[in-house]
Length: 219
Image (cartoon, rainbow, N blue to C red; front, side):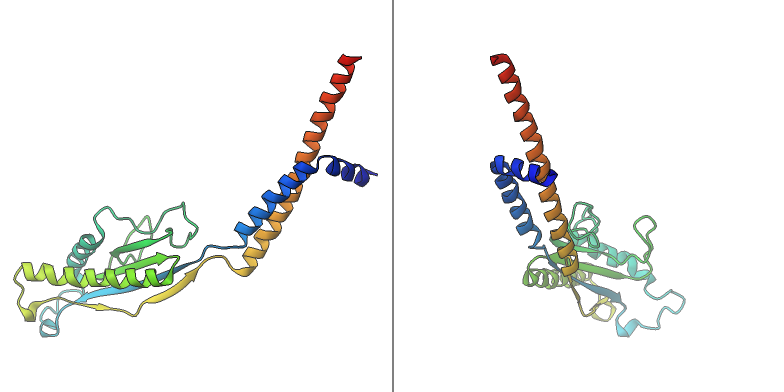
């Protein structure tokens, strides 16, 4: 009985059903097209040239190069360039939609930073893999150029020059899995159906109330 009554209301308010269906289909289309991005990271580690290895046995390995690595990182990325920690992002693990980041490798966390090695973490992310890769190597070139520029400006001898080694990049594709997309589609469908039915019933009751009030005043 209740089902027949609901069917009658849905047919009577067909235009609201059509609107709800259109909105639901649009939401499903957007949900079924997940946003993926290519995330690439590499490490640039600064070290003493072979000619100076063993000349400072009392100095912890890499300790004297930390300020130099930090200076190169600031010169490439800018002092105020943050790490990927934005909360307004579809990629929570990275925190950015697109762009590049260069910073000292932090072995601590966001609240307690710990820098123990003269290593820069170079990160890029972009929905287009080719752009992410291009940005990575462009940033690596800047790191190498700044490393050379700083030492040239201070008249370092060739045998004294700090060298930088670039690790092989790590490439990851970020985005929702098929299972997550399927769940999102189910939830969207249910919400669309429920919202449409509730809207139909609300509008139908409102219009019926107005019709009855008009009949009373007319009588």
